[in-house]
Image (tube, rainbow, N blue to C red; front, top):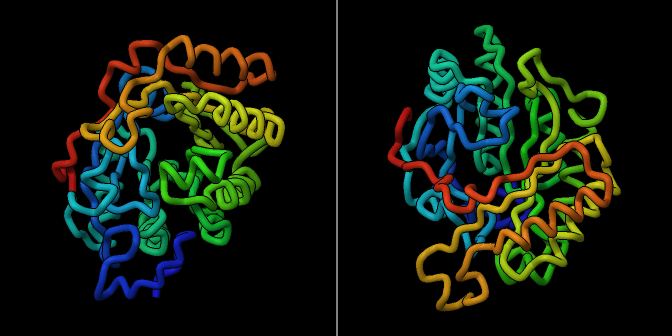
Length: 297
């Protein structure tokens, strides 16, 4: 019975689908160099992060930009052995790291794959790129396996989390989960190579949603007052309304005004945030959504 994520759905994923939308076999929709992460992960000369996009997700965000994979529709089932091969293939293509995107429901297989890869001498950093809706005990399992944590911190408001992600308890899990991540690889444990590429550390992402400025400020304030420079904060402007969202959520049917985004950035600066990433205005116009066509799988 699966209770890997806070949903505790108890599904027998050998025979049925969990809340995450997938069974117990690894399902991957894309494995390729990804240029659109923070520069210290993707590189400054278009080297790329070795992103492995897993199918399924424990959240149900109404604004999800990766809906084809987040509900488990797109992707190909693979073995743990094949996942290890993908690590080496991405490294041969020049990947700076191996980036597990939405990996929570496959954490046990991922741990096994990392052990197998390291036995064969694999030496790139592993990135855990997640929604932030995680059980702290799962992060404890990853101690010694993950070099870089890249979680979202979507909401401080349980009401907003319930409305937009069907997860009223999101803040209750995001806080202790992040605490465990920082304890493992944050603060004075963070490191970068000579080219400025992160090899160990924590980057917390927050994307401003239309009409949610006050909650976003609460998120940034919490992150900075709790962790200071022990983490990097990535403030994102790239919210893109998906087709049909105006029917049930008309308030989300437009992009964030860039003046609003600048207000949030200015707020972070006024608080004293120094370790951070921001996006240029063009980012809201660019597509950060790759093709989930099983490339590299």
